Length: 320
Image (cartoon, rainbow, N blue to C red):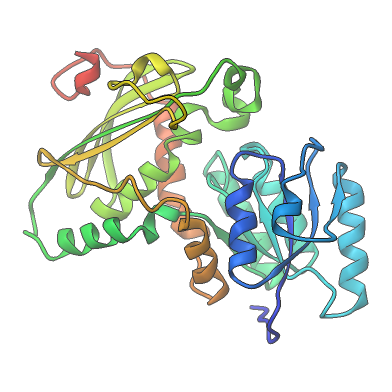
C-alpha cells in the first residue's frame, strides 16, 4: 500500500459544485491540506474561493485527467495524493478507477457504488494499484452513536431491540428532475438518502436478515428489516408533506428520529464536522474501505428489488 511521508497532502475533487461538496472542502482545509484541482460539469463553483486559492478548475473530465497526469509525472510534491469524489452516485466507481490510475488514494461519498457486484471489480483494481479506496460513513464517527454502540455491545447478549427510524429531508421539484430522481443514477430514495442510516443500523445491530417493503414510490419508501440484534421499522421521504412537525422559516426542512425500545436517540447535532473526522481517520490510515461499505450496499440493493408487501404489524406507524 502506497504511503505518504510529507506534511501537506495535495487533493483534487470531482463533483465540486454538488450539495455535499462544502463539507469535503472544509475537511481538506481543516486537516491542513490543499486542494489543487477540481472538476464539475456545472461551473457554479465560486465556493472554491472560500476554501482554497489557485485551484485549477475543469468542466471536462478528460482535461482534468490530463492535468493530474502531468502533475503526477512532475514530482512527489506536485502530484495529487488523494482524490475526493462527490459526483453523482452512478459515476462513483468510474471516478474511483480514474483516481487509482493516477496513483491517488480515494475518499468517496456514499454510496461507494449502487450495485454490489461493482464492489468486487473495484476491489480488484484497488489491489492492483497499491492505493486505497476509502468511503464516507460519517455516522460511525458521531459521538452519540459511538456511545450507543458501546452500550449495545455491553448490553444483554440475546436482546433484540425494537427500532423505529424516520428520516424526512424535504426536497423541491428539482429533485425529481435531477439525477437524484432517476433510480438508475441514484439508486432511489433508499440508496440516495437512506444509505448512511442503513450502514449505521448494520454497524450497530449486526447482519440483516428478513426484509419487507411496504411502500415504494419515487419520493418515499418504507419497510421492515430484521437484524441480528434489532427489528427495524423505517420510513424515508423527500416530500415536505410527510414532515410531522412544522419547520420554522429559514430552518432546514428535515426530520430525523430514531427510537430504540421506545426511547428517542438524540443525535441531531454535531453533523457539520463529521466529514472532517472521517478525513482525519482516513489520513491516519484508519479509513472506511470497500468491505465496510458492502453490507449497506447489499441491503439497499435487496430493498430496491424486494416485492411489495401489504401493510402489516411490521409496518412503520406513518403507514397505518
